[in-house]
Length: 70
Image (cartoon, rainbow, N blue to C red; front, side, top):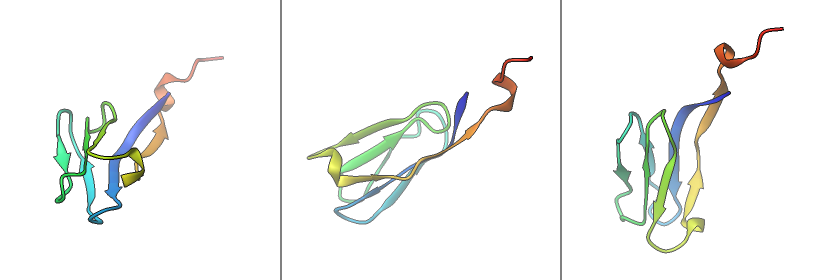
């Protein structure tokens, strides 16, 4: 199962790199055009104008505990 390692994005309008580090950590860029939320639990994105205003920077890893045993 894929787990969130880093929940981050960059605003194309102001250049801010924003990162949500824990659950319900709502972070908005300085020009208020986009936000990230969810920490390592979920990805939530929002934008004022267009989804193209944001560059996705999130990273994932595979959770070894979730692999089925043979």
